[in-house]
Length: 357
Ligand code: 13P
Ligand code: SF4
Image (cartoon, rainbow, N blue to C red; front, side, top):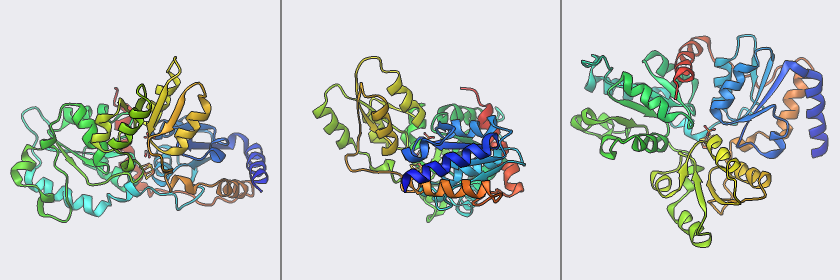
């Protein structure tokens, strides 16, 4: 039964004590979140992995790229475990390393490698945290950096100090929304089509570009629409519409605010008057906020329930199983990033951690 599962998880946590830390992303279901030692957005969880150097086991209740990042940042002796190995991220899968390498080669053929008079490289690769370790390693060895939705602007500023242009992947929406807010015109943000020569742009368009966008997107956040915002405003004229920057540009433009999952949490937590919030992000997080802040009216912008199906694959049954195995001295579902990829990916992650807002 469910109660028995929770009891097994609690007992295993008790037995493992300080040897174990459980990290949980905001999008995890409540039955999993209740067991997490740290709950956070992807940036906070990357840091959380660093703050528990004595924990032998990091059980990551999130998706694959987050567990990989924890493995890269954690000490060698620490083992990172993903309770269900099928918990991936469809957006991360949209930028495979071979296509990215091929695109990079073409871009270098247009731009060359010589820095300009200010010492800026022709182009800097920036990958969203939601990407494979191989892609982070690609950024590490090519002068690039990682960003999350909470620091994308800071990271793009970092990149523009060092480069004339940016190749941003995998999420076209986060790239477009962030660059637009920084004043980059849309005409200077071509999207790279891997099936066409030069990604479907002309040489001149590429030379004029500031941000070349990869064609990835999040299937959860792309569901939000301007019409949903209009409907919410028709019913609640005072509604505060807060969306995640993975939403398409027209949705972010129509919303009152956009920000990372932690930004959304803080927006709700910081509201002093009873407020109506329509939120454009994953429904497990929205429902949790609604339960935590009953003084506000909080609902998901998309009336059709839209959980992230891969986050949802972390079921308490898997958590109970991996913890039970640890108690028995067996490590299952370990995420091990090969050491050459780790070293290069760590460079790109450490640039991010050092980039000051
Ligand atoms: P955050 O960086 O806001 O935690 O978002 C991660 C994610 O997967 C959003 O879809
Ligand atoms: Fe990936 Fe979207 Fe799920 Fe986030 S919500 S893990 S970007 S599929």
